[in-house]
Length: 161
Image (cartoon, rainbow, N blue to C red; front, top):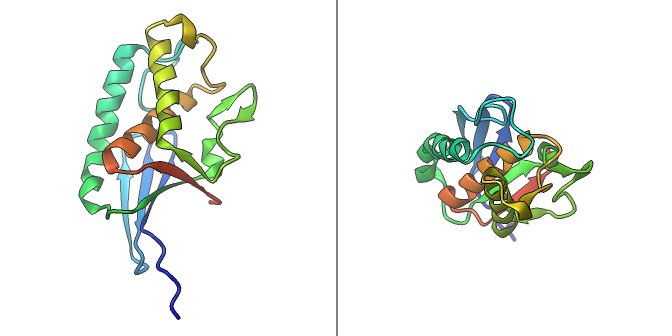
C-alpha cells in the first residue's frame, strides 16, 4: 500500500535582506525564488518605539505584494506554507517566543498581530506595549500576513529547519 503523498509546501527562509522561497512538490521536484524582501528592508531604520508609521506599513504591503505575486500561479491548491520554527525568533515579547508551542500558527492569529501593528502605527492607546522585543517582528508579521492572504494559505506551519 502506498503512503499518502505529502502536500506541496512553500518553504520561506526570511532573511534580513531577502527571502528565499522553495516550493516542494509531491513528485520531489522543487521551484526556487529569491525575493527582494526581508526583515530589514521594509521600512527605514531606526524604527520608533511604537513601530513603523502607517505610511511605511502601506509601502511595505505594496513591496511584499509585488515581490510575492510571481509565485501565485505556481502554488497548487492545498499547498502548505512552512517556516522554520527558529525563524520565529523576532516574534518575542519579554523574551518569550510567540507561537512556538504549536505546530502551526493560523491566519487569524497573524491577522490579530497585524492589527496590533496597524493600531500602533496610528498611535491607538489600546496597542501601547504590544510591540515585539525586536523590530524585525513587525516585518515578519507583515511578510507572513501578505503571503497567507495573497498566496492562499490558512496557516504558517512550523518546521524543524
